[in-house]
Length: 175
View 1 (tube, rainbow, N blue to C red):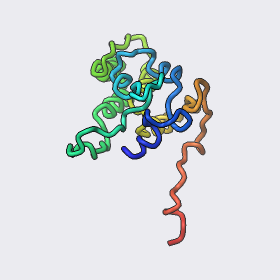
View 2 (cartoon, rainbow, N blue to C red):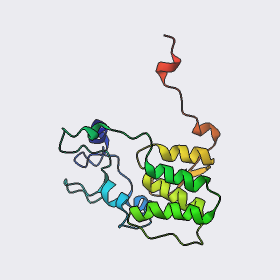
View 3 (cartoon, helix red, strand yellow):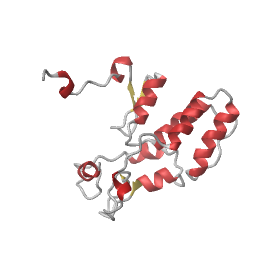
């Protein structure tokens, strides 16, 4: 995880090599809410002097003796809250759960007039950068249009075939 970060996301690598979000796309995902902890701790301006934010979620920590540095959670409490919000039928309870997460991310409560599924999708987009859970959310919900992460704007049209992940060669070649 840390080695991949250094090769792909590290702010010290060249502009031609780094994988970084388009600033306008990043601002749109976080709805220009710079008080969102997910934005301010995951997307930082690197010390190298780049004038755009780079992805720091998987940057290595300085103290290499801390054991939790090698831990990767299988599921997080936030994801459990989102599952509750998605499965719950009472809108008041859905909003209570979503607002609990938002409160802990430094955001204000959602209005009672919002569309919960729309807000839940926005929360998934903010919360799970670089983790792969957003893909499975899109697949589970059968979402046919997803943001194009390689461009400043635009979408990618999805269908059931595009949501099928190919098997690794190690599982398809004769042993």
